[in-house]
Image (cartoon, rainbow, N blue to C red; front, top):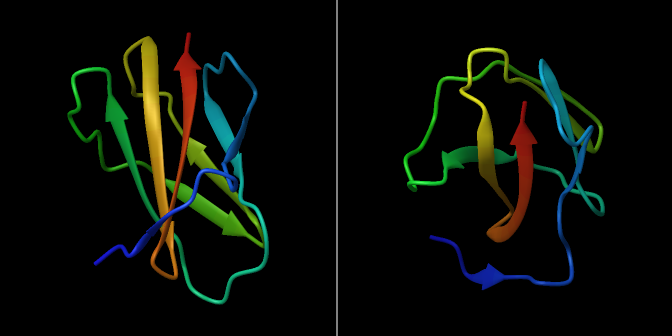
Length: 88
């Protein structure tokens, strides 16, 4: 279960807007794999998405997503962080 919701540690997402892929820059150091979910504006989870994790960055292929706004939720070590990106 998620215990903390942190507002001061947000996910940086680039490029914005994006067409093929986005990169999530995660704050701080962590020793566990992040659990990432992406939701459309209706709150529906869109998956599966191909992710590539290296250090504090997560690269996500978004080619198959429809154009629009998406909410990214990332849970690491029981801490929840969020971000938003736009798919062209």
